[in-house]
Image 1: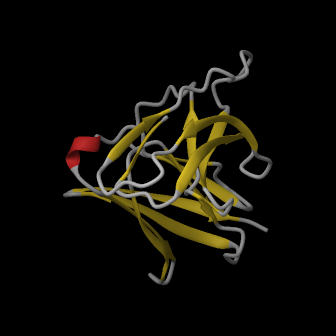
Image 2: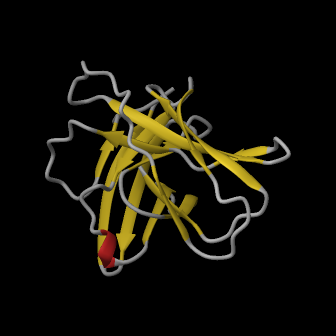
Length: 170
């Protein structure tokens, strides 16, 4: 796992957390932070505690917990990783149909091809969510609050547009 900070103020450490379901989290490591910085700083953590037995469809979710010197903390966005991915598709979305979450796997997209925008539209063309994604991997999207129905998931990077339909069921 790699990440970069552009500035830090009174930062103490990064807690690296992993989850098998996106709900229950455990801290698997800790990386010391710079404290105070106004320049880009690169960090790295290698997950050496991954379960040795895992199926190809297992997704592990990761997040960072940045803790300040005063004990206050905040979390980063969640990222998912499928260590057994065998699909050659640029964008994969699963499970489909879904009840609560979808995993948008964009690990087939090149980091050098520019920013990635992910949007979800209902069948009336109403934008339900739109977000920029930094890096590639698996983006976890909560659709629990959406009514049952069909939705278009659009992933755009430069001139490349990938569109997939998902079905939300109750």
